[in-house]
Length: 263
Image 1 (cartoon, helix red, strand yellow):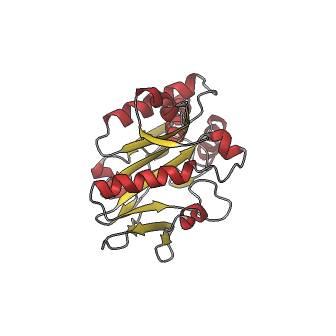
Image 2 (tube, one colour):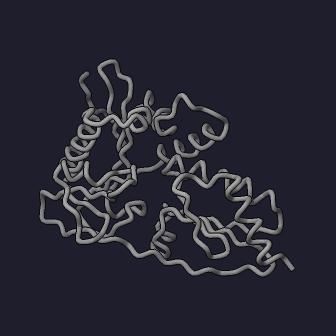
Image 3 (cartoon, helix red, strand yellow):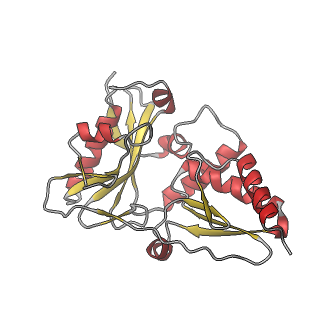
């Protein structure tokens, strides 16, 4: 079946905002998708393209943004960054490779970047068992690794290699309370689900918990902290990979309260 890539339109936004999980709707998913959609529609820098079948049904999508965007997670000039390339989750969970969907989306990103006079494309890609943005895929397309980082780049111009930004975080305790610091952006569906869970659970503990949110898509926040997604409970980073589930959050907060109960 042939694949073509088109600019995201009204008929694609539900698929994109739900991160391809259109058959797994529930209340929290729809809430998260709405948050994500509102942000995507208002973003001037983020560009989204969709891979579709001959009948117009979507198979995957790609986001791209200039490297000077707060969400690129890199430092550099003259490059377009791919913060997310997503295939329909059935393809990913089924381990189906060689469909041509990912390749077509990256090629569309290249065409967009060249048309807009960028000098290359950069991406964070990963090795090992980390399923998201696999480096082997980008390497097959001609991307090269930047030194020992997780950044991979494909340049056709004279742009310098991009560099990783260094995260900055300093824990500020709140006397008598558990402090929850959360860096996030509505750009990601998983993160939108996560912030919903975090808000609901921290509210359950009332005055025992202080939730401090930092928007990673805010240029000032990005410049100060350089974190796109991070969760800290009393200064200790928590990372489950998937979104922080409500039961996990409750457990962590209860343990923090036991170690340092409110006065």
